[in-house]
Length: 352
Image (cartoon, rainbow, N blue to C red; front, side, top):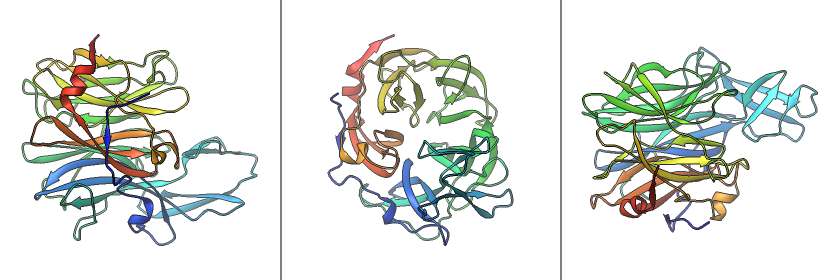
């Protein structure tokens, strides 16, 4: 499948070896799925950094956080009869699921949007408490009325949920706990209020009835959410037949709210598509792309920690109001960049 993304010639722009690990005894396995924002005249990424100990030939080892914030290493023999380790990302041991890495969020900034470095004086964002013992992941950022809202995936043995922190200066943060309980992720708050309300896309998951679909919710204050409605589902026989989830905040255009989303098929290939929501009633889907707008084709998208993946939760609309500079995770290991034309995406949408 051909796509319409113009990839950065410098891709991947960030690899695990480009930044130091957070803790002695851990190594960075993956850099993934950055949130994106502009601040202090620069472009910034808030990157998911996944770490684990160096692996041994006969054992699997991985870190978890204790509720009081200490890092604990669990080591299991590969031939243990109670170990199921068929997925690079998740294992099951004695009937319980664990992640093979522990993720935190790291801030990086750039003058040119290509070469990113870690600035001094800005904190790491790490999991805290018993609802984030497996880390925090895949942050989305939106600025509303001078406040930056950070929604991210909070992971623990209790499930996968959506956490929220806010900041004005990126050095001090207010923690609001979970705004969507397990099992939920892929939460993207709209970049402005609609009819006086906050709106957010989110992705509850069901193992029985239903599926991994995109929902929308509204809020009077950005903290308390209701009026939930399912708006985008998977499509049998399509590239997004297994799961769908929101990318970053929808882009406001003259035709509606344009959302770039991810979808996966039964072979766990992750591609990107788009749909359009009504400007005044964002619970209404107007149109959707049939084919993906981005497909894993480059070597760094096909081969990596978990290959055949392009996944985004961050972009910037450039001053020409047509170019979208999108940052994305490739094969669950690298951070890359690409550009799209909003007009071209809109031209590919088909009424639903």
